[in-house]
Image (cartoon, rainbow, N blue to C red; front, top):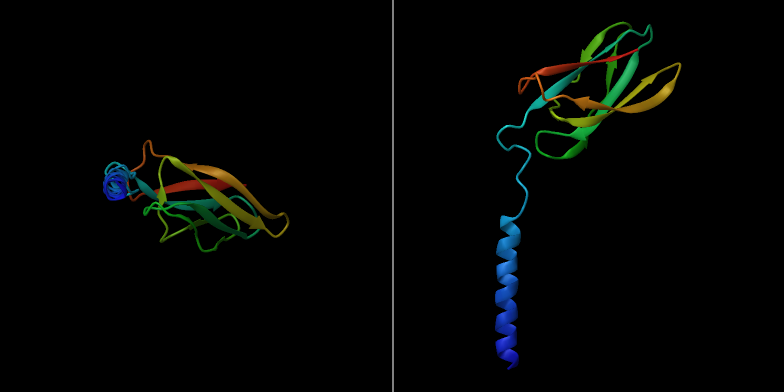
Length: 122
């Protein structure tokens, strides 16, 4: 009797493993997803340091490297692609205010995959 129970249990576990593998969600690179680079422009007379944290084109939650925006200028956060239709954490610092962060939506509507979306900071 023990042998029969063991075989049935093993068959159930094997079946659950197959079903579980089939039920896994699709990767972030599924057709229809869009990924954008972000460009940040500042109207400040101070240099602004910034970085992003969010979901990249591989479906990973990652942080970017740091960039600097010259006074009243713009900087593209090149080499990082963020999932459109989701938000990212936008971390930024001016010498006069210290570090702050805010959620920013990376829009999907009206954007081309591989494009650059521009954000503004005061």
